[in-house]
Image 1: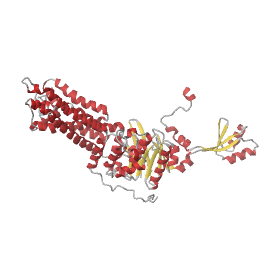
Image 2 (image 1 turned 135 degrees about the horizontal axis):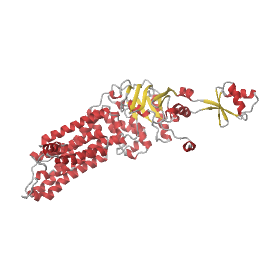
Image 3 (image 1 turned 60 degrees about the horizontal axis):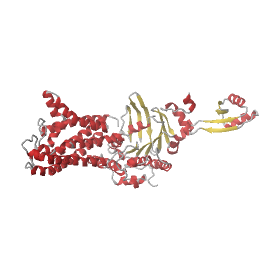
Image 4 (image 1 turned 120 degrees about the vertical axis):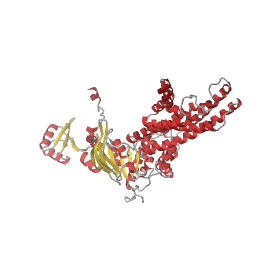
Length: 307
Length: 270
């Protein structure tokens, strides 16, 4: 269980995390979702006692991280796949970590085996691919068999097989009753992995709900209508109280469902070429929710750049 | 799977804090598991002992002659003027590569009481450099003394000569710990090595140019000067502090740096 209360981090004149409250419950995978620069990593560093909060508190299992006598046995974290010395072997990296927390050395072989790195444990990690580095980071997180597991962007650099493996691992850890907190900037990934969502943008919590609720609340839908006499159809539907917008000759109708649109149009003997219920993806829902909180916008078309 | 139950006992707060010996082991694994450590230690021995032997071989007849104005006791530990460079490198790398690679976050996540990390690193560095420094001086002595004996000016391994052997260990241990403290303060490899080498090799000699008593005392008190006397039976510079008072000054200077490092390490975000 991770609990944050009024958690705030200010760097100079930038407020990275702005007074957030949340609880990460055991027994489920909680996704921590937000665009780059939203405050995910800063929040995770504060959970681990690496960054001191400017205000507020964050506790793990009811106490501050630093009060844990052997923290790796309580909370395991993958923070940054590069947080290791390139000249040291994977096994030696895990050995020093185990030693520092009084974890038996036999556990090193177990976790290397678990993440599929047992054959390259003696190799220097500077020669590792990004995916192998991620696997080593996950091995380090699981070293102390912790009840809380924090994974910052765990699928970065993994191949499809590795991504599936992380997904099933997160599921298994949650099913074992552990608290699993996984960050990502990819909604599609979260929708496959998380039971519960914590969406953050510009340092504020934008949504704290189950994946199901998120879809209902934020994944907007509309009815796409194409008709030869679109102006008349538009007037008709507007008259019936629908919210109609026009995009490149098609009408997007909200407020009236597709069968009702069909009936209204048929009652006036007008022709329809298309009548489709369009449900926006979770990706779109996430984009909409965080649109104002994206730190770096790319120009989406060449015309915009030219303009 | 039978372990997949929600009432699995996951509370681990009853775990006892690992002893300091576990932290020492962790830091020793870190230090001993990168090749650069072994290269640097090997270079310490080769240069530290080799230069003493080389200089005694080349200068034994002059040292025995009437017009010698230096003593054999200065030459028997000649290499200890160069070996500190290696101690600086070891001390810096042990700390700054952790900051450079981001591994410091793994370290502080594993041991959130950061003062314990600082202490464990310093103890491991000090012990390793004491052993290597003493060994280097002894190899230098046994390699160089036969050339002196040939000229009838051999030195017995007793008194100040014996003290210079483990004194070399103390000096290199001090240099490594001092550099590691600076490393925690600056968090940058090149910066740390340059600052400490400049302090030892450049500033330590420049202050001799300051006129009057002030210059004399600055010279005596500079860390490289105060700490080096313990590492030789007979220092080239006769105006430095004596061996043990010099070591005490050097130790006090290191202690100040350690306190500054400790305060900053506790306060700063990792």
